[in-house]
Length: 229
Image (tube, one colour):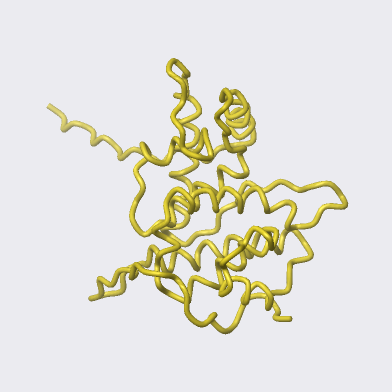
């Protein structure tokens, strides 16, 4: 009798294509009020904010944040199976990229001709911030190396929304805002990877250090991938 053919390992799901993203937006639009579902741009930032937590967040915890910014449960009888499947696929895709420190294409769409790069990135960053509101462990890491990559993200947020963030604002004031969307997107992806180096470090041989929890602060790090003012 011939030996049985080995069963291949399950391959990762294919990245979501444009049709998948459009379908996901339709499903998010169908979430009934008073719930406030994310749009696909904010969802992308939210998922990165979840993945960058120092402790893994179970899907059962982060999925409610996709369909409501406050994480309120869906109404009984609402079928979210397809929506959840697409969100899980994007989560898996982003997690692979962040774990490997590979480039990924964030879901950021260009704005009108008179819009700025910050206008285009704001929904993504808003989703990232929503994840930090629901899961505060990342912001509780006591490491000044977090301040600069966070500043690269939050410089796209209106200043009045950054109260009590003096260390962050101090670094934001030294960063030259991007003038082109491609440059802004590159900085966004770089910031995600720099945050991952702190919150999800790849272990060095013989080391098992973990990020320290506490009140984030400290002297802003020197140097930046963008020109200083």
